[in-house]
View 1 (cartoon, rainbow, N blue to C red):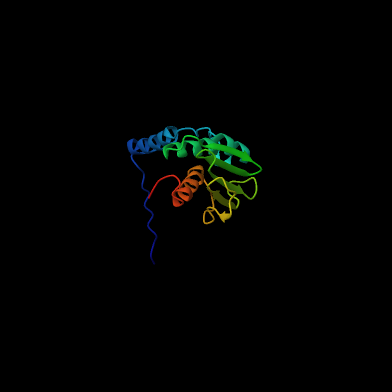
View 2: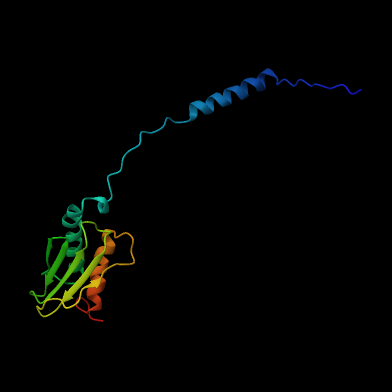
Length: 151
């Protein structure tokens, strides 16, 4: 018959106290949870009209200035951003299908003071339209017309 052998291992008092002390120190060493600081909303999350007037129009003006255009006149009305420069001879319009920067957009441009003959989709492959992309899209489209920089 096999008898079971029970071994009772006790830690020496010094090791026991060090183990207990270190675990209590770990509990004390953890910093209290910091209060969660709410970040202000991204500018693209602002109400549509506020985003356009406060951020998009000034950013377009700055981007055109970098291209050497200093007589740009911008107007925002009825979910459309219209720009006119070169003494009224060149113009573009960015159309928003609804008051949402991520909604479908269209673009048109015209030269020699005429009305636009074509309205084309604008930034259709993008799910989100951050400020930089909205500005870049206009500049890129007008550069394709060779209206801002000669190629």
